[in-house]
Length: 320
Image 1 (cartoon, one colour):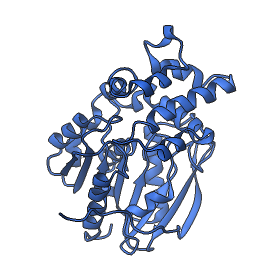
Image 2 (spheres, one colour):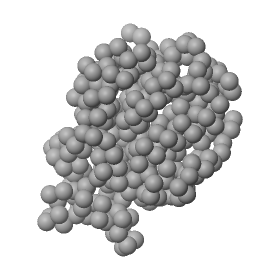
Image 3 (cartoon, one colour):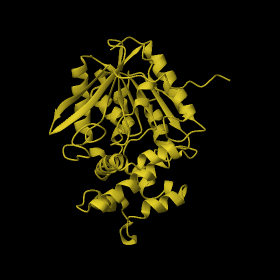
Image 4 (cartoon, helix red, strand yellow):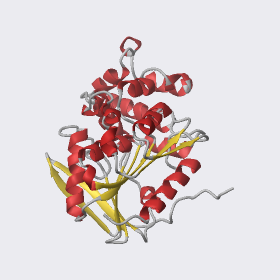
């Protein structure tokens, strides 16, 4: 049996900064690896999740020059948890601003979960700027996907965790949980806002891996993280990502000619496998890897193995 690939060693950025992207937003970015090597951009999940030092380790630092950034309103970007001028299309424009700032013509685009949706939106809009796509835990912000995770579906697999997700919402408001959470997450009651944020974030943190991971789940309960994560995620999902339903799958033909890899865990609770399978059918040129013993998290061994192999393979392609 072939040994599973795992993270590259820890690495510090060689450059960090804040980019003024307009509308009162400043986006934190960092670059790691080898300056002038193959360009790549990492798109984190959520939306509202932010980047972590572990994300740098998905790329061979001797072969890549990777830009990672905290999307509007989260991580070290400011204003924290800000919802104004914070939409999918603002983020697509930010990626282009960062590419121009980095001084590269095109780059590998790596996105997981919400980051896969953002990568698809970006590549379908600026296909000439994406040298390759590496996508994990495929999400396209369709109503069917949102309903599965936030109304009925995953609730049947994790009923005890679902009870905790329901707890902040009165029974009479549970017919539309996204809307009920919205009222609390944007309301003036600070205690209620934080209670809702933590319940929303912990539901996700506790259902990402095929086996329980207490350390990962605990991180989602951190008040500072949870507030941005829940507010921004809910904001995007109430508005369906400012996308037409099925838009990202409908427009997959625009990806033709871009080398791609799709990695999906069979038992992904957050992003059901059907979406990845439908993307595979709509974009058959991309390599499709369905990991039978995995859930959603990029750190699950089988998923991580395929992601590292993909970035290694594409490192051999010409730099952008």
